[in-house]
Length: 157
Image (cartoon, rainbow, N blue to C red; front, side, top):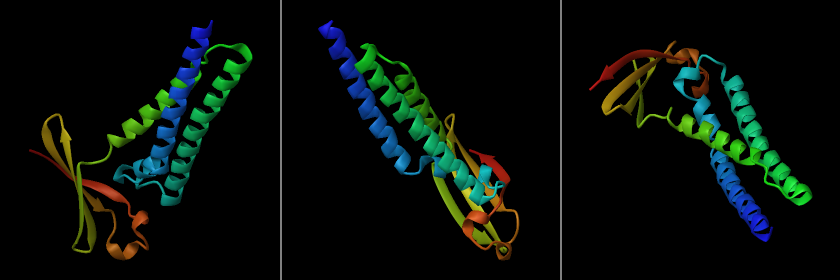
């Protein structure tokens, strides 16, 4: 019986440490970076920020409410609550998937009154260059987040 309590306590301590790590990762704005990719630029930038806030808050709530629930179950019923582990793994999966949408290189310039963004990706051992072009000329945008990007070309090496 004592071994079981020690096991549950150690599991909860590991989950707590992992949740702290996930919270630290969310503080760096991983969901904000995800929603700032050119693929989402057709969505108004204020809406993208709202989506990023909702994703961060729901992830934060998911991991910490499930952890508090696990501690409550341990104290009241002396059993291990697996949903806390599942919630942490789900949030980690979303954060890890979001990182796969970041290019290995990103460069921007202006050409003929348009913004040009070139992203270099290493996909399956190949270098893939995605060239994005602003939908309208520079004079139509008041700020950078308002730019609507269109995929101009894809080159493979």
